[in-house]
Amino acid sequence: MSEIVIFETSMGVIEIEMDRENAPITVENFVKYASNGFFDGTVFHRVIPGFVVQGGGHLPDCTQKQTRAPIKLEADNGLRNYRGTISMARTNDPNSATSQFFLNLVDNGNLNRSPGN
Image 1 (cartoon, rainbow, N blue to C red):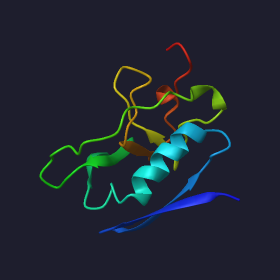
Image 2 (tube, rainbow, N blue to C red):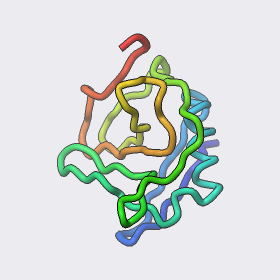
Image 3 (cartoon, rainbow, N blue to C red):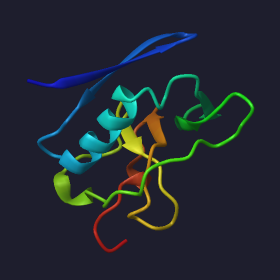
């Protein structure tokens, strides 16, 4: 059975299906943030048509919220950045994901990471 995280936004509802089998660390991290209300009142601070919509950490005044420790990259699981999927935002460090995520508006194969790169 799939887990669904529901975001109620000013533009409508977004339902996100979680894949705990293939990304257990990432799903656990994301679900903790969601169930603890961390995302409440945050905004999608990066919107690039034809690319991604990013949120999960900034308040309307662009203040960044304090997060928990980053999680380990789970890139060797077969999941890819296809249109309509969610992915965790990271810095150049592959093990830097915390709360920020992005929704792929198109297939973004160039964003796929693999261990070691």
